[in-house]
Amino acid sequence: MDGAASFVIQGSILAAAGIVVRLIGLFYRIPLIGIIGDEGNGYYTSAFSIYSILLIVSSYSLPTAVSKMVSTRIAKGQYCNSVRILKASMVYAAVVGGIAAFAIWFGADLFAGAMQMPYSSYALRTLAPTIWIMAFLGVLRGYFQGTGTMVPTAISQILEQVANAVVSIAAAWYLFREGMKVNLVRGGTEYSYAFGAAGGTIGTGAGALIAFLFCAFLMLTYRKTMRRQCRKDGTGATEGYGELAGILTMTILPIVLSSTVYNISSVLDNFFFGQGMAHLGQSDVIASQWGIFGKYHTLFMIPVAIANALSSSLIPSLSRAVASKDRGQVLDKVSTAIRFSMLIAIPATVGLTVLSAPINNLLFPSKSGDLLVQITMAGASAVAFYSLSTVTNAILQGINHMNTPLKNAAVSLVLHVVILVVMLYGLKWGIYAVIFSNILFALTMCILNGISIGKYLDYRQEYRKTFILPFFSAVVMGIAAYLVSLGCSKILPDGRLWLGVQVFAAVMAAIAVYGVALIKLQAVDEVELYDMPAGRRLVRIARKFRLL
Image (cartoon, rainbow, N blue to C red; front, side, top):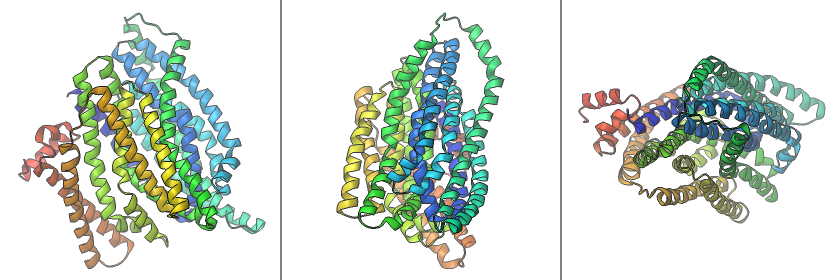
């Protein structure tokens, strides 16, 4: 198996786990939102936007940075130094993770007040210990990724989300009822929603703890292999812990800054939306509409998870290729990553657009259903743009241009904020201002990253098989999915069960039609099918139906 195929397989392992994780997250959010309502989901989503930024600073960047450093040393045969990186990273996690945990605990009221959602402070405080745990977990995941395997990360993510789902629902159910009692005592209405949201975030901490214990157990069992590799290390290169700490900091810093700038848009969206709606005299709908936005965000992040998984696999893989000075392999990996992500993201965009109503009515039945359907259709294109910008960020980091994504994200963020403010205060578009400014942000990142990759690698993007043919295949797919959905809605009786049958039939038809269209339009050939996960089975199926 060649290098490009290998990293696609590793990325696919993580992508498969990512999809499972997102689906578990989607399905447990259904009963969770049913318990805490749109208002509670607004507090939950707002708390997570703050938590996500502090998580990026303390631990989100650690898997990427550690995997990059470890993979580079292993490519050179410096196994002892790879172990030293692990130890130095754990010290970093203890210090920075602890600082972030204290910041979110003591700053909860300040953060919540700035978002015009003071009751989200309860959920924020319950997330404080989680940040510390995630820092250590990030180091362990990064080390395993650096050795070339995504399996520990994939399994730990699934375990994390299963524990998260179970504890979140149970804790939200219990605390929501406790909050109702507080409402009666204090004469309020929001404590039940706030306590319920806090119950949901308690589940996040429980999941992180389970995942950490699993990875720690794997690390203990892997110690013999690490010692054996160190004994075989004949390079004689020994990096001091001070030197490694400096390299780690310099590796993490640009990733942290670029990731923070790239992801802080959600916090700024939350802040400006809250301030803007309050300025327009609509404070009463801030929490509920932000909760509806949280439903849309949960849905569109499922296909984006594939791009995130590819990125996690791509960075150490690219770093090894760069370290070995194999230009052909670097270009091959770049092309494969972009193309593979678009083969998934483009049809997902079309699918969310044409099936927005049945999918959302099935998953999130509520009085706010019409608004959710509309913003999902309006924001579906974000799937393609966020997927592409995520992968191109990873490419630039993998080829050692760590500061470039930061610069590109900063430019995109400034434009994003300007457009958001104009749409909110000037055009008074409300939650749609957040949707459209997010699309613009991701699109700008795609353009700037694409220019940078072309400049640094002398890389010319192929468009026909990467974008054009998948798009036309997805259009054919979308028409088929819409017609199947429409036909089912005409013949099936009302009810959520039958709506599920309608969605399932439309999705199955979409998958089949898209696969046939890709092959018939020659967007993929037999060799490329073999390089995909379950490639031999795909080729057999295609030959059986005389598509090849």
